[in-house]
Image 1 (cartoon, rainbow, N blue to C red):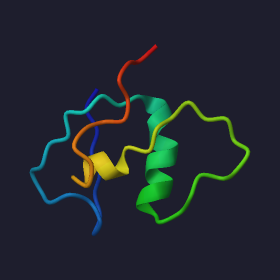
Image 2 (image 1 turned 90 degrees about the vertical axis):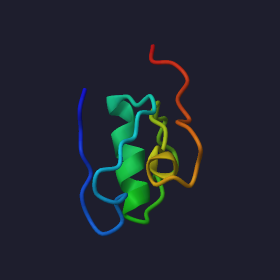
Image 3 (image 1 turned 30 degrees about the horizontal axis):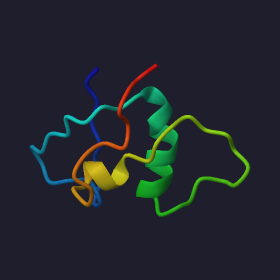
Image 4 (image 1 turned 180 degrees about the vertical axis):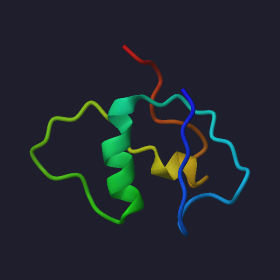
Length: 66
């Protein structure tokens, strides 16, 4: 699945993130990109991918998609 992220905090133009990502990861990732934390008490399957997308982490926190 192809996707894109755009905005002033997004990685520079032409960069590619090839880490493993699931649709459930979008919510915590977008919250993180906006500078917000995931609300407490939510039982989410998603992982925050923002550090990996922006290069602050070496690889995706997701290892498998079940």
